[in-house]
Length: 122
Image 1: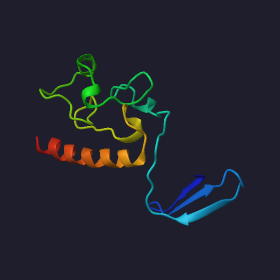
Image 2: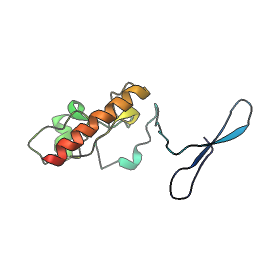
Image 3: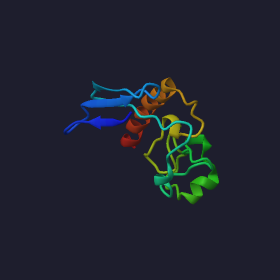
Image 4: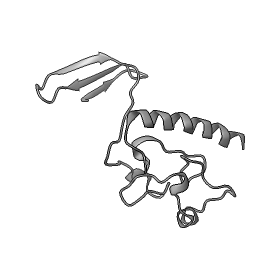
């Protein structure tokens, strides 16, 4: 991808064929971005707990020590996809333990929506 264009929302995406060098644009209004095998999570440092590789820890992967360092304020444990910050969820490639496939990221996203509704009702 070489360009994202639009006025008040995404309208067009331009990408380049790395073999031919040719670029082409298409009218696209939505984009799903993957972070891939190397997480770009340094901007979250100090906000949520990550593993040594930079993947965000969620749910059962958060140790009691992780939660103590994060000052977890709730009496309940974090939900399955919940980070060390209550009510904040991580899904897809950025999450530690994710299988790095689009289908699993989509599934995790739909599960996280259920947990968001649960958190909002607490």
